[in-house]
Length: 277
Image 1 (tube, helix red, strand yellow):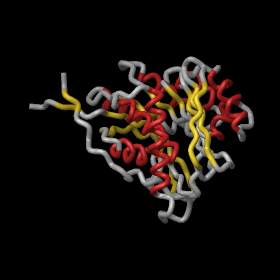
Image 2 (image 1 turned 45 degrees about the vertical axis):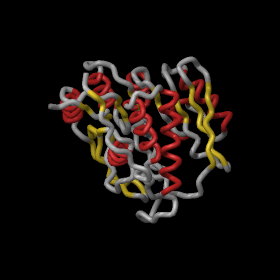
Image 3 (image 1 turned 90 degrees about the vertical axis):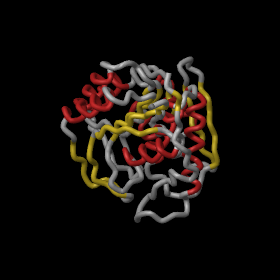
């Protein structure tokens, strides 16, 4: 008899052979938080901790086939979307997901890698705004990505607030604007909820360059907590706490010659088993 299910999270994202970001970070995060990870590969970046060397596209049909194969068999409790670098890919993902029952979507608009490399084509921005922002439960841009979406400089907390208002007006439901690039002793991220209220989250900045894949990890953590049944505010709060601890526990570890990864398994949880109806 099969009496239980695992809370399932689908990660739709790009590849990272160095293991710290992309779909590899998603799998590690989802697993560390006691959920079951399924995946769809959207692109094959050739990268390591030092930067991105090339990006190879995955055929559009292969992406839609992957989504359908997973959704038809293991319906997720939450979906995380990461690297979507072409307009055609945006349309394919949005169009395919529309065929299924709505589940919470955490969209991390990956545009710039930790190394500073641009990961998205210019003409993809409009497609993201038109197709993915409206269906996402929450988007999680960093300051560089917020600057692109809001078409303005974003380097201070006040500019983050202004950019958040601009991005919200594009049709977003909820936004978590990450403040990790702030040059201050503490980091403040801003959560703009669907009622247009702004909630700050402040943590002490950890002195390390081992932050490769932190954005991927955060979006996957939020999706995992949503899959566990947490409400959005709690999922955002817990997701940020998880990332902060993962950075702190991996801050003094040498992995590669560049910006190293987080320690995703600083406190791994047992797989959660939910009773079937």
